[in-house]
Image (cartoon, rainbow, N blue to C red):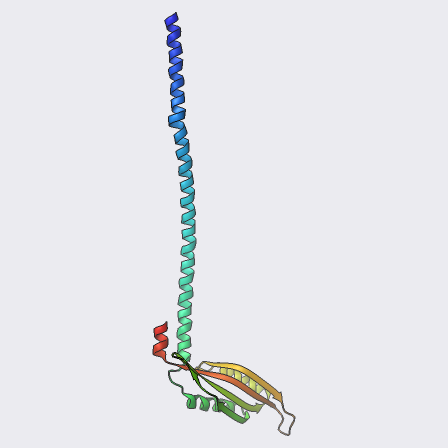
Length: 184
């Protein structure tokens, strides 16, 4: 009987050693490795999520660049290659006459120029009623050439002619399209 008891104790001891071995060298490292893999999986998912967000931002930026390129092309179309001052002054005079604006004065100012763009300030003065002036400005805005209105001054005149005296400071742009095209 004694041998059976010793065998049973040994069997229990071996079983206990196997359980301790499984826990220490099998289950424990497996749990640690599983936690490490789950952490790596979360990090990978976060990287993928950030990657998808950045990809969407990149798509949006490409759309913005394309839109800006279209805008630049539209601006380039509206900026003539040459000064064309005489042609533009004639066009302004015809437009003022079209709306029966009287006492017309068109005075070019001192031109400034950079490597890519030139600017000619022009002062317009005339007299008319509000309807005529607003129609003039509407057609001026629709002109093919880029014209920037800096300042508008309207004064009601109480003399024998009546009406409103309009004074407008505007800028005419022209540029070297070869240089502008190279810059874009």
